[in-house]
Image 1: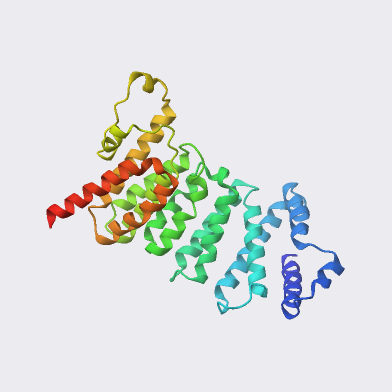
Image 2: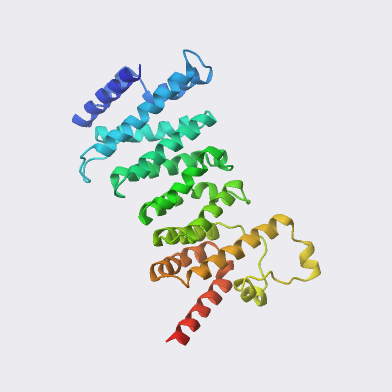
Length: 316
């Protein structure tokens, strides 16, 4: 069945590629393959008719087969986005994002397969970027499902530490949709632990990746209370700020936890400024987007930078 399905897609796409006005074929047959998949195949799988697990397994294999063929194709960068291989890759990507919603075991299987292909990549080019983009799409369309990261997938996060910096940067960025969710989610803590490991690894790529992750967390942290200006410098030396009794009564435990995490992130960034040039450069380049997103952090960040300038002047 899956082979017949793939053959049908190939025929339609090849006809469309040869003649851009061949829409009459699709209109004449009145078959919308995406709706056919969504409304019929998934219904069969959900109701466990005709072996629902087999249908889903076949669809997942089919989607990854299309993505693998895209990786192995010798397509030129200037080739039309309506080529057969591009259309099939887009189709597979959209289907995987839908399939991952159905069952927890399917979610884990798809993440495992994506990480396998990303880790096998030797270069960070078109042959792997679409797998990273697929990981981002899965996280974006199912972010609430991954708020608590499955135990079976925690070792996959640790494998990011083995990647080259440019690839690791894109992979940790793929988890941004989950980080953007409000509140201190379990995944955010798992993500934070990964960055702590990376920061103390001897590999320079790991520490640069950790800085990128800290900047992402800091950028999307929810500041619920503006710290008084007189307390801004206290934040950069990482001591809890003193507040009046009235103000303290308005702060709940969630707000304290969020503020504490922001202070720890600033602490980690300040430590990063004592490391190699590449690590410091990563910090400097990432601070402006953070300030644009969270202007409330301007005072502590400026204090951190001024302190660094003074240190450099003393050393010179």
